[in-house]
Image 1 (cartoon, rainbow, N blue to C red):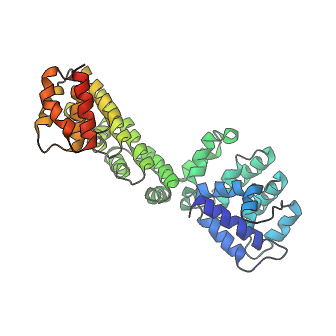
Image 2 (cartoon, rainbow, N blue to C red):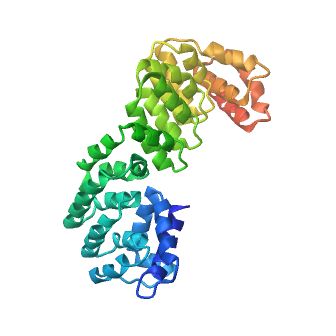
Image 3 (cartoon, one colour):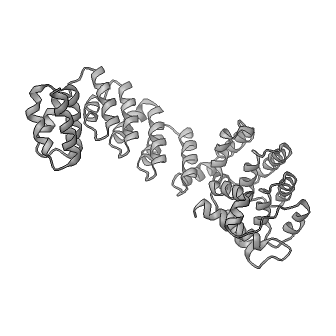
Length: 362
């Protein structure tokens, strides 16, 4: 479910589930909703829970919790969702009291809620969350920890909790066989934040052919963020892994990944034929970088451009790239080869041909 939809539903359920007159089933549904929510969704729930305008949009009254309200929440038959919402209350005293009551509920959602509170602006609340996390960590299975790895990664960007000491403790739990299995399963999760968090850790824990297989799968992912991460990781990997994956990256449908491949190729003594081929890439940034790399190596790609223009079956992308190369390296003698393409029925080819003619005749 979309994080915003999760947050709006959580506010509605909390309104009807909290004492003194809770409606049946709402507390159980709230707990189920939050247990299934992604790490990103939990952060949106927290933002909405303190936003008076969000309540107004949903037609809900905004009523701050008090510490004395928590006894009633904790006494409900299904208190977990109610206490979870209390950890996000405006009052620091309420958040601290909610954390203390979570000690009785050792489960993955508690872990995620406590991680979020490490960045609490109130120091005593963050300290209570840290102490509770250390107690809960020894009892939770790695599969429950993995779900909230995006929150653990976010600590690096949260000013108040950067370089937190809990991070190595969690990472150590993931180095077990059960942790490795949980990470492996998470690398195919539909939640991209979780998938990336798991992939980063799996990449750190593996090498050689295993790492190559992990990155190869990620390069074929549907989400561009996963593909871009994999490309950069492959570019930074050991030579044998990088060289095995460069052809895959060079053929990727994402221009930024093809550009990453070219940067790695430029540092390598091999792949010259792929550098020349990239000079005819349909993307202008890729073409420009490839032409600079080819020029450094004194390779002749103008001849290849002329060959492409003489090929009646050359695809549109190759034609655009070849015309662009000749606009930079061609001579007046190439005009006879270039001019016919100004009448091409494909707009991108015709436009590039007109530009090349103008440059060659200037």
